[in-house]
Amino acid sequence: MSDDMITKLDPEIFTRRESEARSYCRSVPAVFTSASGSILTDQDGVEYIDFLAGCSSLNYGHNDADMKDALVRHITSDGLAHGLDLHTDTKAGFLTAFERHILTPRDMDHRVMFTGPTGANAVEAAMKIARKVTGRTNIIAFTNGFHGVTMGALAATGNGYHRGGAGMDKQGVTRMPYDGYAKGVNAAALLDQMLSDASGGIDAPAAIMLETIQGEGGLNAASDEFVGKIADIAKKHGALLIIDDIQAGCGRSGTFFSFEKMGVMPDIVTMAKSISGFGLPLALVLVRPEYDVFGPAEHNGTFRGNTHAFVTARVAIEKFWANKAFETELAEKAMLIEKRLTELADLVPGAFLKGRGLMRGVDVGTGELADEICGRAYEKGLIIETSGSDGQVVKVLAPLTTSVEIFNKGFDILLESAEEVLATTKIAAE
Image (tube, rainbow, N blue to C red):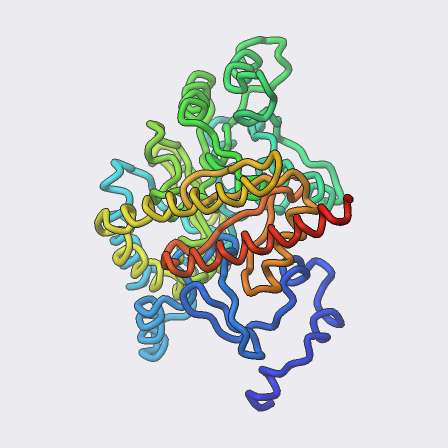
């Protein structure tokens, strides 16, 4: 088949043969053929600004030149493509860079466990570790949390739609209200009270697991105080603290880890999505040495550790995290995002900002309105999606490397789209 035949592929092949489980492509039906930085190009040469970034899997943009060059050199020199968990030069390079630029500067003594290549697999491993360490089975998770859709991770996920796909009971998790979930309720104090009460009805937990910023749950951002109290509660009641940093990590919150400035040190951290730097599958669990209890291959998988991803992940760390320059740049961009999203919120009665850092959005009240705004934006060349219990949050997950110029162009499209949708809605109401 010629390249021309491939690039002009009939999009009907997707509806004819791909599973009904496909999702993002339903609202973004273009057939993409290339990408660079924050721009995606479809088979007709139409360019789109990417404010989705692989759902935060492309924090450093598409096809970063330095990562690409390193990967091409590795492949063309017959570097390993697959190595199980054998010792390789690429794994050593990644671990050395990760230790030097990420763990040591943050006084983290955590071991690095490579799991299967998805975030859900990392969550599964983290939950298993906590249960093995403590001899307990119960995990405390939170309302609107999203930790994956494999059975163990799904038990901790709050979304009813995804839970409905399980086909069987989901066990081993007690769900409690997240920070700000119930108006007037001190969620941390409630959890402590229930765990302290012999008749509180909650089995002693192996772990308390949370996202400091709930990505799929609607960009709910926990306060430093809440996360600090949860850490204290975990310690008080003999549970491990698991921070799921799969979407909020790798700079998305403004720092490499989302919890860095909260005064807590998790026992376990799960990471995936942008940890490879290049959009390649890679997931890992960071675990304190005293809780590194699995025996050889007790949690395993054929693809535990992606050799190609090690190459690009090392470059990403050395390029963006060897000093504070990138973090300073992120702080400036976070201010720009807040300013432009405030303009969007001002257009919609009752709308308000959500999230933190470069993981931000606007709750516009209904999923229907959010979908219409994002749909109109797509027609104008901006790819942006929604999140939240009703899909009511217009969510910005642009590559962290997006230039100020492209950021502003994307936000201009978003505001113009919102204005047009709101004008149409107002006319229809009248």
